Image (cartoon, rainbow, N blue to C red; front, side):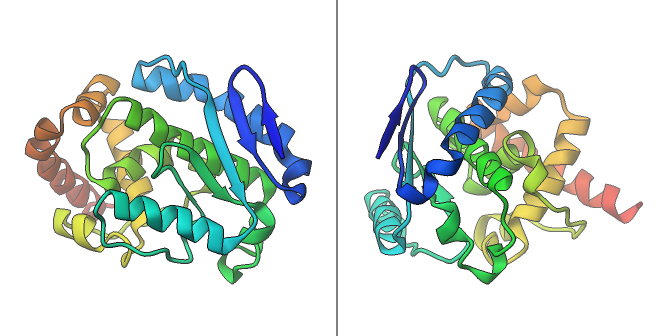
Length: 216
């Protein structure tokens, strides 16, 4: 099935019909804030593909990994992605088959689409930041309602090499909250646009964050 208006093209299944209207409404309400942060006008249509077949979703994702020469495979927590330039999401009913997501709500699902839209905006700017910093941004301006905090200290090496093995999203969200509270938009945006500047400054920012956690 296909839904299309002036802003969206959504490919969906029978099981998705009940929340297409809410999905569109949620992204429409949040996308101006997200685009304003990035300083962009997202002038293309937002393509969303909803998958109710896990094997089809895994194939799309792993094909995208191969095109990027990434040695990655699908893992259970990968329920949405933008690897191919579209918002690809497992249908809500498919996500809820996993024990970790059995209480996942339709609103959380819609906010997660806003998280993925944030990634599209960072792609729009051709950002070369490491993946974990994309999650710092997306968890804080895309779907903060879905996040939980983690006060653990961490190193840049852990973020770069072990994000999937530590409580990565919680750390990204908590670190992002600190960044948004202590650095202005222009500074954060400069890191997104200039990865060399980001690499020069981020270690100091991590050190300051870790020190702030020790004082709590």
